[in-house]
Image 1 (tube, rainbow, N blue to C red):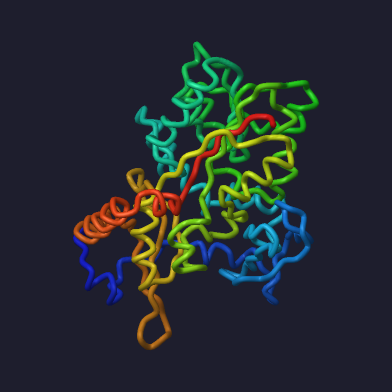
Image 2 (cartoon, helix red, strand yellow; image 1 turned 30 degrees about the vertical axis):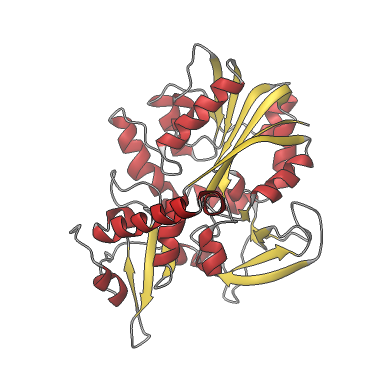
Length: 372
């Protein structure tokens, strides 16, 4: 596939999507019955963050209703897949392609590559943990193929990971030599396990019941434990400008959409307080906010071992003039040559003009929390 790309072909709808590519919108169809109802679902009667039952529907996307709490403004998918259905989806060919196509192949080459997070961000987390907790027992929850755990110094930390995807577990064990399995948090708690560092990196947005899950996490924390959470920031430029076109809205993958304020609130309910935080992904936000003016957003799994990076699974979909078909662009903004450079140059200018206000609208944040 040629790498050349220009704004005219982008806006006019040039066809570049292969026939065998499966989009998320297509993969979701089997999750619904003929009446558009989820086959195996969980409906929340109240906000997972504050417990309020005063909810409103703000939009529907790919068949999933997105609600917002009128009290704390938390946004979440409701109804959502049950735990059983979600586990099946995360072991499905669509989702597993992220790991099989990229992380497994890169691991075989001895490389550390993560589909969910830039390595630079993971290195930042490890450095911050090293500053705040120089030694201790580390539990990475939803650890994937173990990329983050691999960055820790095993002479200073006792490392363990839990994961629900079988391919990830096998990769972490066989190719990285890590202690990773499917053990549930309740089993660890019942076994008396306690950890000094608990990692939830790009996990909280996927959970059917985040409040109960965080309570289980808190039960595994030692007295002075450090809890590290990285998650998409819904208080970002793309959401404020474009609403439902924000790339974070990818149900049934993302179910919970936190701002720093709502994350603080849900952590306080389980006895933790945010002590430090940082934002990242500003340029990602501004670039996709501009592109989303012209397109609808869909997602597709990686097509090769090199097909990864921030936004690489985004597909830009534009209806054809006759309304009968759509045209998609399955490459990230990173690969669009001059378009990418100009968008990010604009992002640099905006960041320079007003760094504090704009930077707080970045696409993700990392929060470091300790017991209150």
